[in-house]
Length: 171
Image (cartoon, rainbow, N blue to C red; front, top):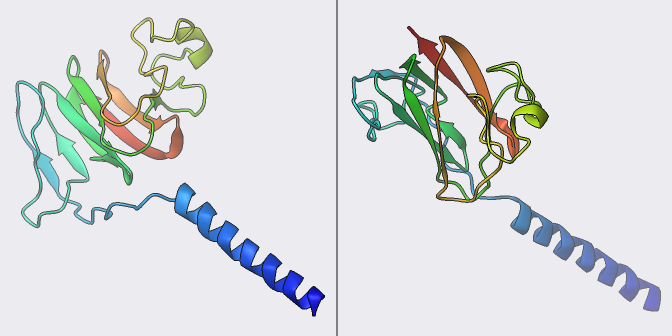
């Protein structure tokens, strides 16, 4: 009888441990946008909240003058943004997670200017016009970067590298 009680106690402990693990490691995921519309706009400042007519978030946005990318628990939105050389993109952390925006490749962030995180983040701040936040920030923090050359630049959240996006910069 004692062995049976021990096995039951162990089973209950394992179930409770599993529940605790999932409760504290998983965050509620926001609905994944399903719209594939491209929204075009011309702005002189930060892009406001724009959504396609079906109410979903755009997957790609064309802007001129600057844009804002929101980082949520579901990742970056919009995933792809189109700007011009000289435009500034502002990344806003609206998630429950840390956000550290960095050019691909992970973890070195060499994709924009060819320098690595060790080279361009040696003092904790990006140097030499590199596309790297150089440190993560909690909800509410922002990171802005002005793109000075044309190209397609993939980026990710260094703190959650599977969350990624693309900035397409044209002349």
